[in-house]
Image 1 (cartoon, helix red, strand yellow):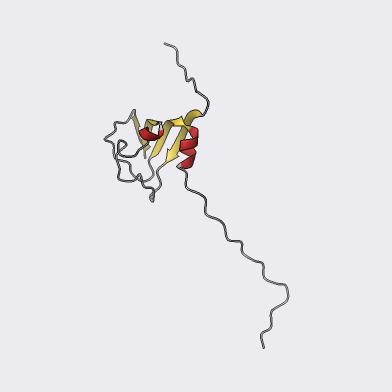
Image 2 (cartoon, helix red, strand yellow; image 1 turned 90 degrees about the vertical axis):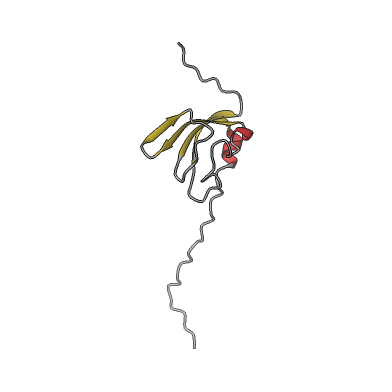
Length: 99
């Protein structure tokens, strides 16, 4: 047996984390729409449990880690946008007097 992973342009393997506020929490893999986005879940990691080739009936929980193969652009689009950091202004060296 020869192991191979041939990847077409734009496709690859990535790990996605299901965060607690994600729309996927409580949905089955079949309901998740991942297959519609051409993403296949290879392995589901839940705590110390590893579920290879999970069935479409597996319900996703917060903090599940999904090892996926599929369109990289689709997987990138599932990552929530980072919140902008609010910069804290430095206080002036001289106190501000309000009279």
